[in-house]
Length: 418
Image (cartoon, rainbow, N blue to C red):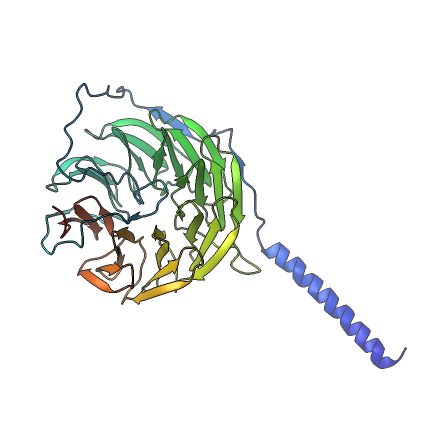
């Protein structure tokens, strides 16, 4: 054999061995994608019902509020976490405040609302019921760290806490009705559908509990830390995890319908803090590294990806065929829901951490650097500003905007509200 040919064969052999070693290295460095499983043991979960019985139904219905009859019952405004009321017709906020209320600590997540009362958590340990017309505090209950929105369910609200508990309170008095204690922190904002409350824990489990008693219907171990809030549509409940997975489960039984792991590169999976949102056709989520993903809601297939600049923590708002998402580069982006194509972007002098929300033809968002913006969804033009910010800006009802910014609640009537 000629010497030159021998050298070529030897070089090829070395290359093959090297590539094989690289493949083994990638396999060792890349964590395995687990399928998850229902947890039937639940030995580390405690359910406590209050000694005071659940209040009986009121003998006479409460009089309806004279305005704002439509509720915003959970983080996102609906079980899908769409963060959108595209049919709202109240116009932009008026210049003059209706009222403002300082709560002594910041609110990482906006309030929920129903029948004339706002329910809001402050970060360092309190849940408030606030009269929506006046800003008066109706009651206050102290608790652990709350980085979430209370969920309204009939005459109950469901409140999660970093101390690992999820608690049902009577809406009228704030009295404890039941309490569930998990093995991890609960930052997930609960959502209630058909008598089941859904929430995730940093111990990796997604829970479904009866909203009237707290008794656990099922718990699913995803294998990845959960800080996100579950999204519910049809028969599915879906959750994102720090392990890079997005799961959709049967919301009644907890059986897995599909799961998808999203890769960042050949060596790593993505990691999700933001909650998934959906329009029923696609699931949208933003990774901590700034990747926007859209998955087929039926089977979890990856349909498209896009990016924001810097870190990504905002739950996408979804309305009228658009997805609105912000990043730590200070830019709010409008993406086409069907393809991920960028329709416009707006640059601001700060960082976007909290989720935007849509009201009619406008999208509202805040930056950490103490500013809040109202933007036309058609073209991204700024049409309203407020010199206060941080974090997820707020919610909208039929006549009123409620902003939760840097420890203060602010109420503005809409300009077109009657």
